[in-house]
Image (cartoon, rainbow, N blue to C red; front, side, top):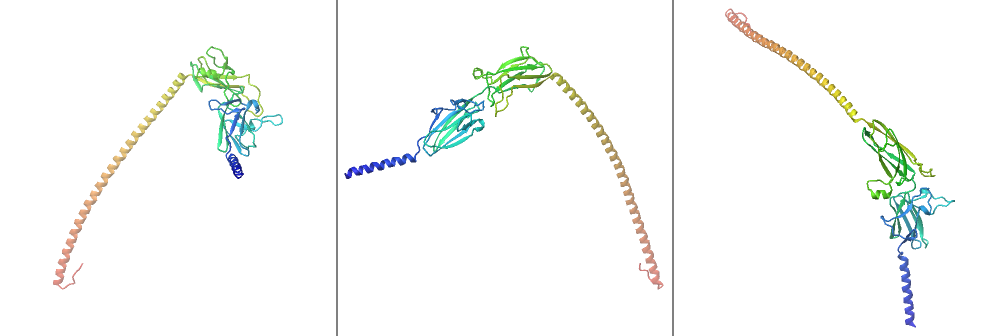
Length: 360
């Protein structure tokens, strides 16, 4: 009995330890994408139509269901143009592109946590789903909606007798390229290479681009016949574009663009004439400058001559003054000498006759 009781106690303790361990370590996160286990990659993402009608419903979203332990937090974080909503559109509770968020966190209640992902871009985006130390990434890519915008591209300018190229393109309301769209193009001031003025251009599809890598998805080019001087206007129209959808940008059904055709030879001749005129002006200015330099040099020479003459006269005057000084000095010395001799003679007589002497 004692042995049996000990075994029972040990078994109960072991079961308790297992129970504690299972609570302490969350089970791996389980994620399904549209009801299937996540197997998406960047090369093979889940695809879904962009919500061109501005309604997030089952046809424009991917269901993401994450199963995790009760009372643990499951976080969904998006990249690119992917957004999340917690419920789909209904009449009483509309869900639009304005409802989407970039991240959401939900506490598991023991059943799958569900979020709905949508995207407005044909580029691949993702949703990272995290629960504790576990995480998984779901890759999602949108498929373009119906054409909502048409655009036209023309050269900045062109020369006469050349054959310029124009192109048109179509995009959905979110700016994604739309292939297989027919765009009517009319030329004013030129013709297409087949001499028509109106032509229907069909934008390149993914299959077209795959077959010819020089093509651009959603775009189509056309060559014009040789153009004459003046201007060329290109008008592109897509009558299949529908009406505006509430909450989304207004469609662009028609657009035009204009470019100028110039006579380059005439332009070159005009520029050459302008250059010749400038050259003549420069030559005239150079001649005037040379004349001014010559006059200045002559004036400098005259001033130099006047200065030399004045210097010579001044030097002569200085020399004359020096000579006068020498003469005056000699005369003064002779007078002083005669004066001293006279005083000496007088004093000799004064001593003899006992008269006062002159001391000066």
